[in-house]
Image (cartoon, rainbow, N blue to C red):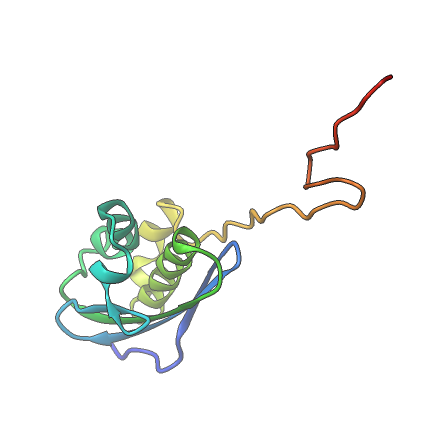
Length: 130
């Protein structure tokens, strides 16, 4: 089982994450920082580790993530998708498990654009009848 040299990409909102998967002991770095430093809440950490826990590969691979754009939640979602894609590239047998969990589907929900003549996407200026 050889690991691909090309990074796997994940996207969520305006965030893009490139994920590099290497054989190792389960060490995860995001933008040069430890996982616990970059994603301080346990919820974000657990969501990021979902693909690894579903495939029982938490201690098998070292992961390097380069994330840019968006916010913390968007970057976590992008990194999670990138990890899932990298695991499939390493071992295609993981695909049914990850697909059933919904980790391979791109979440295409984006922020709605601001419309002209309005203060926001849906909000209207106050209307005065008289």
